[in-house]
Image (cartoon, rainbow, N blue to C red):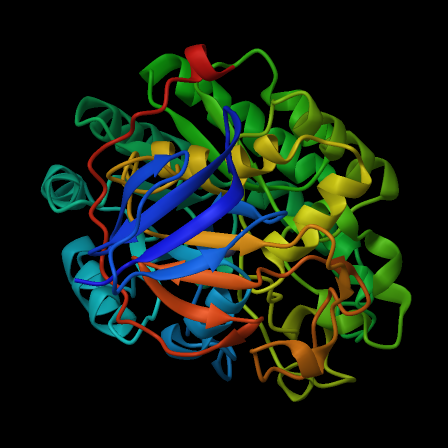
Length: 456
Ligand SMILES: [Zn+2]
């Protein structure tokens, strides 16, 4: 079977870089070395001066989810195409558990919806309705390759919030069977108090969204969750960390892993005062510029473990003007710009690209049980490879994105898009445009291979 010989690029993994050839065949990386020989029907691609990175893994997407009056703007088909264009070759998405639905049913339903994906995908299981019987489903789901379970400390009004004593019970079972607990860390009571002190809940002003969800909510929830992590020995992964104070609250707890997102590194609350301020409404809200700085420092020091997007985009018309701020659908897109924008940022900030590979590939693969099949370029790994020309800096603009959504928070940001993307050994994107797609595959989590002690 024919393959691809990527000649003379710089292969960048989380632990270093090497100039070498790479041979892709039958979906995998079959060899890395100097002066590899090709077979007659191999396609040879000159990668001199180019970087070869493992395909990015976005550990936090919400494709096609129901909102109050409809659906978010990307489903698995459109969202995964957009992902590929930005070099994301694997996504981890979340189940939606309806009232009265078992975890197993919610997983089965989500696996059906994910079938049109053109990138590989794994699933996190949301636990939004607690029952003692549900605890018995956890080991079965871990057996089926779903090892991460997410709980919410907010969204009482949507019936999604679990009490801390319920979360503790979940943590005990998850820890016992070798899984991971994820948390949306915003303390609902703090939000409730902030809301009840506001006189203008009918106002459409998106600045009030930030005021209604103060940093203190994140701090308190992280304190409580860190306590549960310490007591149960369950690893707790905090999704979308948004603030410097939240980061401080996590310190000293080795069982707490942190994910942040580009929006909390690159955007601040001043955007809520813009004409399109409502489009930036997401939870947690955007914070202050000092929070951006604190999170960049946390990234540089290695204290953040993964980068995700919380991808849940909307078109302009989905967030109409003049609706009360409490009715603005929450969420922003970002899966397509994740790697390109962060790569440009890392270079500009003189942070090592190896560290970005760690945050976007190696760590998510290890934390969510896909390593070493994903997350590294080495013999035997899946042939998910990005070819990047570090000299080709562009600016994000809607007309150049694969996504057809009419708004992006990253318009105007500097970006380095992948020039070529290989998905399981097939060339799916060439010269910055999609050529073909291959069906995505459900990747079972084989269990965490991440040790917070070794990896710091
Ligand atoms: Zn999310």
